[in-house]
Length: 89
Image: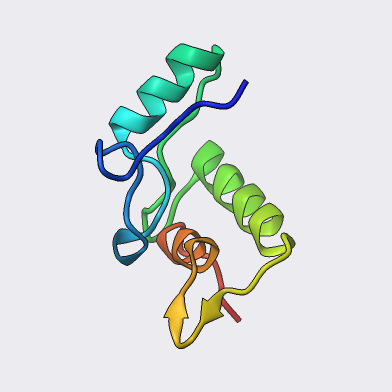
């Protein structure tokens, strides 16, 4: 089942603001799917579970197909990696 999330309704961040879901978008997704999505780890030096989540996300997302930049602008993938403070290499 696909959850319909919209940037216009404030459920997704624009690429210029780091892409990803807002708190409203996460709440809607969790409600409709029974998931437990958490906010991005954006601290400079995370510790413990947050550090593991950040590393896991960066490793997983960096390995996905698709460009990080297109026409000099960050793609949604690139913006998400930047927001999570992943190495954009």
